[in-house]
Length: 136
Image 1 (cartoon, rainbow, N blue to C red):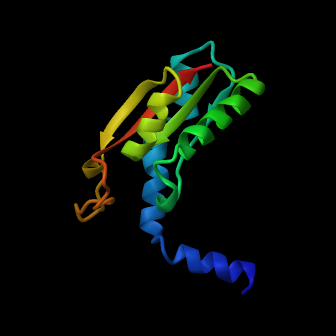
Image 2 (image 1 turned 120 degrees about the vertical axis):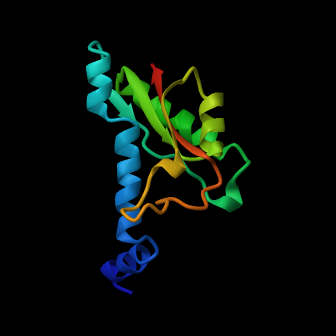
């Protein structure tokens, strides 16, 4: 299968509205510009973006180790802070074990709506999305 065909196959799994909504969810939870504006001394931000592991590998500490590795990189690059978007309770558990992260925002998944009023993210196991900042 050609590389482009494989990509198209995977995109079929994620309708454009959902892809757009996922990007919007992250952008409304934190934006680097907001962090710079709120903390004038911050010069470099390490954006962890998403953290995830496949279902079959969850519960083994892999997320924690991935996040720790990301923080090693952030510190080696002399970043002032790290930020992360947590869409699940599992990600929040990794964050809780990985330093003194401070919450930025919390938003209920049910708040994101389609134009017709239906939920954009129905059936998500956690009730909310959160964003966090860690001073390095």
